[in-house]
Image (cartoon, rainbow, N blue to C red; front, side):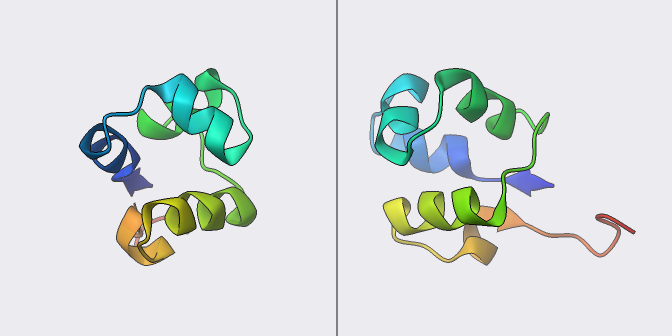
Length: 68
């Protein structure tokens, strides 16, 4: 699943560590999400979207072929 976490994080001039602290996960988790190595739980996706003030669908780009 592609996402815009890095885009929104950099727009707010936050480090991965700072974003992780604000949503309750490690820097490594943020890095894994940004690089597509890890898909967050729905709750973490919600927390990230809420933090950035966007919808989950805006932050995470679901494609027809994902998870099929």
